[in-house]
Amino acid sequence: MKGSGLRKARAEAPSNIAIVKYWGKRNKELNLPLNSSFSISLEALRVDTEVSVEDGPGTSRLFIDGEEVTGEEFEEYAGRVLEAFRRLYGDFHAVIRSKTNFPKSAGLASSAAGIAALVVALNEALGLSLSQIELSKIARLGSGSACRSTTGGFVLWEKGTRDDGEDSLCYQVFPETHWPELVDVIGIVGRQKKKVSSRKGMLRVSSSPLMECRLKFVEETLPKVIDAVRRKDEGEFYYWTMRHSNSMHAVILDSWPSTFYLNDISFALIERIQESGIAGYTFDAGPNPHVFTTEDKAEEVVRIMREVGITEIVISRVGPGPKVLDSNR
Image 1: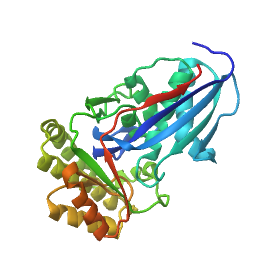
Image 2: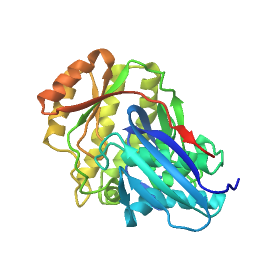
Image 3: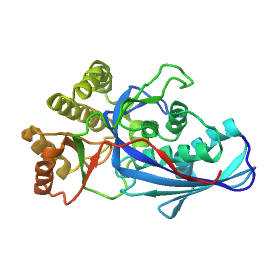
Image 4: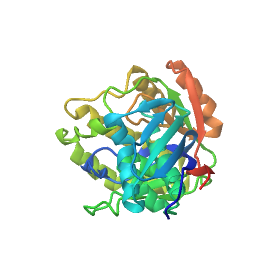
């Protein structure tokens, strides 16, 4: 429904960490993945986004942590999302202000959380009442992993088979309350921006002969990962979490030119966690580890992290999905 004057809405959304990873696209314009993925939304890592919208033509602007984002980065982060909403609503322009509580562009899915918060806030400000499934498809246009941040708990992103992407969507498999003992011990190894973005790194996968094996591995083992979570089987869940992380990073290293997201501290922690038997690590496109364990073993994981040189640590529970914080519509 068309509004009048300036309308504002503010929403927050969680970051997510993929257990079964998304890496590689069958359609880069629509961000359609080569494989389905399975992720966990995180309570401690969230992005707060406010939108101010007015009907009619005008210049849209984006600020992230107080700094204006323009050009190609603006188009990648917000441009596609705004265009998708214009197709549904009509012409409007917006000012977007987004705040993160964790490092951005460092492999902690800040863009995923930010875009998910943006679609929720725009949906509210424009009065569209779109479902979570529909919002996930719009968020996917801005960032593939953003669609997984449109809901909480344990989330499945179906890769889909349609060329138009209408069946490539996300939904919750288990709520955040399903496994209350599970925690993610997150190590902040580096706050610097990645040299190669995930978006650009994924374009290199076709050069890796390992990719075909990886896609088969994902197809065969995704049901086993979901079943391990369903049964709350710690050992099985940790095993598959580590195997899927290693699988993605093997392809990343094997692609040409190679991309180097992990560093010496990352590899030292990988070895220690494998030896410990009490947890399972996973890394997205960055050096910062996510180590899943149960609450009673979190202190031991923290000790291991400190011993390999990680000093900044955040512990997160499985978190809820996005929510509207404020609206004047």
